[in-house]
Length: 471
Image (cartoon, rainbow, N blue to C red; front, top):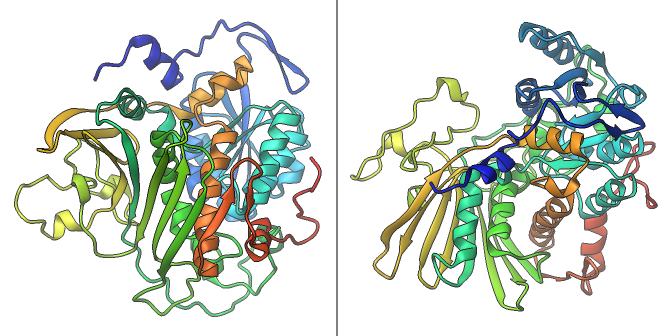
């Protein structure tokens, strides 16, 4: 790969300097050697990655942790100590954590329906924000989070880690430089092995769980295991389906590569196929999204979500890109053996890996992305092999670098861009649920002539967990 050293340092966050000048942060003065004190909220799933991610960034202390499940909280507090770090303060309520004036930044890895509200509260408390994807559970609260970040002059990083990877930056550069010609279409692929979640009966709330607080802004409904840990992704009150769980990464990469902003129209079709269970969101979804680029040219994005048997398009997920194939859901990467690429027909070992990535189509060729850090190209109408490469960066380090420098312009995944990509997924889900195409005004950020869709994109809230109308 041809990545200049200065670009690599910038994009990986390795330019953090122990001799950085003193700067103002949330009413405090951070000296050159002061530690950035981070709190992590939401600790069971993605929060574990946040613990390891921030632990390895120089000059960071995981000073506090928050979870509504006491058993999970206590386990993670112990895990941090096992890493050789001081034991953080533990909280069961994010509102109490935000009262701690020594916390500089909050990292949010909660279920989706809490992302924007905790982000807004964090901004109002004078702290910086790292928020997992998707940044919002509906369009309205995403816009409000953008406004809060701007009003309170906060640093905000969205969990679209591909934007910190030099491999992706180089792939996007090829698209910009015309390597595959005029890029007219991108496909965002999310083919993940997702088994049935079954049907779960109502049961008592587990000991040590504050279920009312976990439910937060959503309607309070009887407890079932399928409304709780991880399976909340497949319930509309709390999740956004796999298009909001995994495909949001691919949507963001596709939009980045096409060089487009808010869409003009969105049309989705799909359904919940094959299984009879508690899942409400579709497990198969096909979405077409039209945009105008900065030159007024029409661009197309296709978003494809599949939940079961599929094929490895453009070798994505086969291991052919020199990166680890994405294992099926529920399989820990440490115990997963990457299949060896083969030329013959796909066998069971090859087939049962996820196909997560993007394919861009241009007038002179094709560029495909496997996961978040590797790409290949095929050029001319003969599809001859062209440039390829892979390289990973450090999204957490980029955030901490900007927390210290106060240079919001250096954030790799700014909340403004995240909100645009997340709006695409909200429009896609709304189109699916309503059964019709939605036309969108990019300048006004409004659905055109569809009050029902507008209400759906607005969402509802259970007091006191309400996203404010005025920021």
